[in-house]
Image (cartoon, rainbow, N blue to C red; front, top):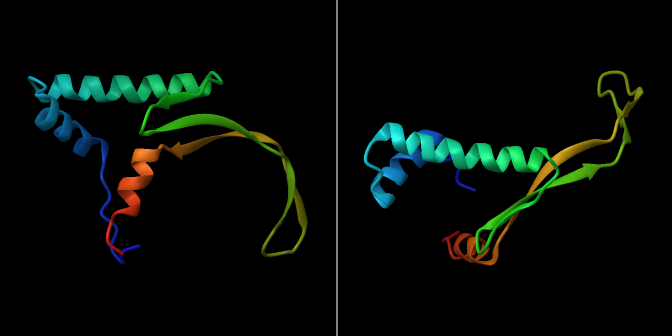
Length: 102
C-alpha cells in the first residue's frame, strides 16, 4: 500500500455521479448516492445479503463469542457474539485491483 492513502469520500462519489451519470444537480446526485447507501445498510441490518453482480456483496455474518485479553493487565475478558458486515469483492472488482501496478 502507498505510504499516503488516497481516501475517497461520499462527496467524491456524488461528484462521480454528476460526471458519469449526468445527474442534473448536486442535490439530486446526493439523494441518489444516499438512497443507494441507505438501502444497502438497511437490507444488511435486516439480515439480508446485497449482491451487485461483478462488483461484490455485503452480507451480515455472526462473529462467535470469544475470550480476549486486556493488554494492560493480561486479564481475560469475555467478548460476546455479535453481527458484523462482511464485504466480498466480485470477480471484476478483484481483477481491477490486481491489475494495479505494485
